Length: 114
Length: 116
Image 1: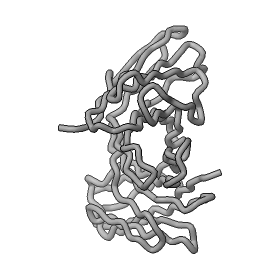
Image 2: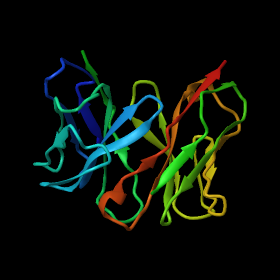
Image 3: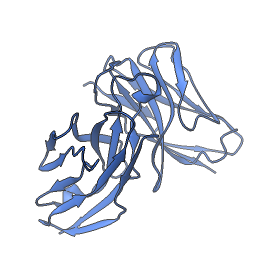
């Protein structure tokens, strides 16, 4: 079945540690996104990538880094520079199209900093 | 900038009640509009969408009409079920613009609880 997988589902990190969240899609989509969800805040865009080896900062990129070495993979690293990393992280993808298109979301990773 | 405003929740209804969740938007271009649903502990799923004025999106008994004159995209369902309990997000996207406008701009979400 085609879709987006995120792992792990739950992740715990000690303060000062970097951690990497996985996102894989087998939909052959060109564009991929990382969002952060906080209670009562909706979703905010962290980074996005429209093609392999290229990515752009979103609205809240500080303290995060990404890579896009393969079309199907878009890992997110939460660094120690992120002041408040505890949140629910969602990965999404869509076809690279200038026209209206649906973004498909993964099941999310809940990160807790201890 | 672009923004989406949803009615604040939580919304609590009895089964078979009528549902309306208000959504209004501000956009510099001609957005496409979406409703996404998030069940507890899960990611978001597209519920319905509309791409131009007066379009009606519908799915699973939910409907929303793109009203350009009132910049609104209210979500409605005639008879809710317990299984509809979830968080509902209104979102917009500006097509044909490239760059960061490929992103979706989300409202803050509305929690719906349906009691038996």
